[in-house]
Figure 1 (cartoon, rainbow, N blue to C red):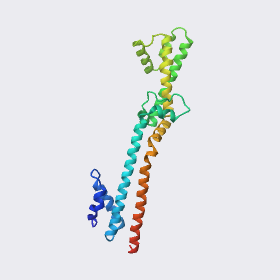
Figure 2 (cartoon, rainbow, N blue to C red; figure 1 turned 90 degrees about the vertical axis):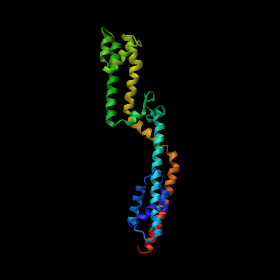
Figure 3 (tube, rainbow, N blue to C red; figure 1 turned 135 degrees about the vertical axis):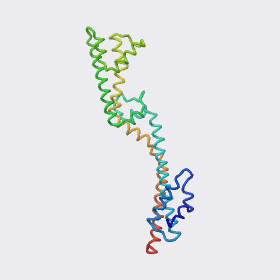
Figure 4 (cartoon, rainbow, N blue to C red; figure 1 turned 60 degrees about the horizontal axis):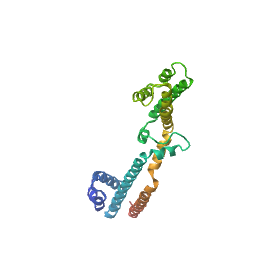
Length: 240
């Protein structure tokens, strides 16, 4: 290319850091040179300056992304703050024993399946509790069978570990103290996952931490406009 020497101009050598892709910058510069077709060193210098401004703006976006990721990482570690704020008028969203990363990574399909499973589990627990309240012959066995298999296995583990006796009273306490609160929490988390995601992103953005980057980006935009204006004026003066 006729402007190949410009790929290694003064600004080019200083603009590209050791860990950055020199070829990518050279391609950017070559495209600008091809677009503006400079005549003389002054116009070539202005085009090289345009390339360095674009390259620096690229860094600003990388820095912004890094800041946002840093904020998200911190926010994901604070479910007790995020979740109650996501739906402030709802109960059961304390953030206790919740991994925000699991909710954040879930797809709408995952979320719908989680909600369906949690509602079935909650309904089965409530049915079992109603059987126990009614009492009668074999109330304990009927209530145990009313639980979904996973909750029934969990109950059997409690019995095996002697945390509860295998009685109607023991099962009723297990449902009231352990099963229903967890099922209700899972239902609430599934219902409000979109709001929880939005709250997580909102808190993770931390706009105040991006203010300096935004000011620097504005500075680069103005510098780009001035440089381009000078280039176009020179081209106009020479009738290009």
